[in-house]
Image (cartoon, rainbow, N blue to C red; front, side, top):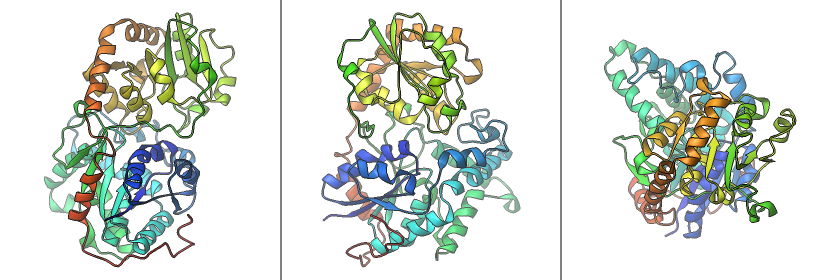
Length: 445
């Protein structure tokens, strides 16, 4: 019997893209699928062939991130309190509390402002989904599922940073005196449930970690946690793309290297952890064709580029990477996973956003590449690492091992029956479902 599946994602294109292949698999299996997000990404959802539902107002993630982090010296790491911070292992209680205080106030509440939460809860109550699949940053998803009786699951886009940090936080919390057991994330979620007509009794750790988690991370790179996971093979989706003519021609040099530093959170304004000028200086003169995805406004400030660099605004990585011997990037999930799919050795300069350092560590452990700490970046060191990446065959061999592992993982189509079974097990009873969306003010299809 067809089920109704509601996807909800943070309003950033890369987060939408992480959901497209699973949403498409469920739709082509005959299930009803809606994807709900703020207006920023509705066009991206529609262009992926999916049905979009508007919730809330524009998120303007770049502006929101800059404003939310303005008081921190390091605005990529919330002053050392972001999920990506690796300064402590294990970390003390005061750091754990500071982490969830900062992340709740500066990230989770900003990603899910009240109008967005209200619209998503109203949509779920009206449409009565059987299953809600939510982005790990979009905690409005499990709230809406809880209040509408739907089963719900996280869909990860990389290693489970939230799972690791939340498990560690809860273990420390349980050891505190009762009067000191502060849990900012649980307090916000409880308040949100009550504001939307639920009660404190609706709060549980499932609203943070899901009833289960769909995980595309290769098994060898996963964080070992005692949580229910459904492994799924990562299938790249780069959005609507036109294959450029030059990509069908032989490379101008014996080997091709991809360079992409990401633009989603300020690279165009020079806010990345590595300067494009340093990377370009590192590859200048190498007998390698470098395909660099550099936004036009950034490119204009760089002056003359090295002769072996082909600068482009955009090229679909899924089409480019099969021709590449290596890639340099900032640790973005789509880039990282697509390079693994194509067994391309990677050099990461982590941007300290969310799970970039965890991906860098996993890459080094697997032998499929290496990383450079942002504080150590120099053209000389980058050049040394690029040459090692291209000349040492062990990195290509490591990348092939990871690809073999991924190929053996069930595809999005393969896990549809698993999701159907888990939905039936976790859905809260039989509830009356409306035949269509009835609130134009909430859901603009």
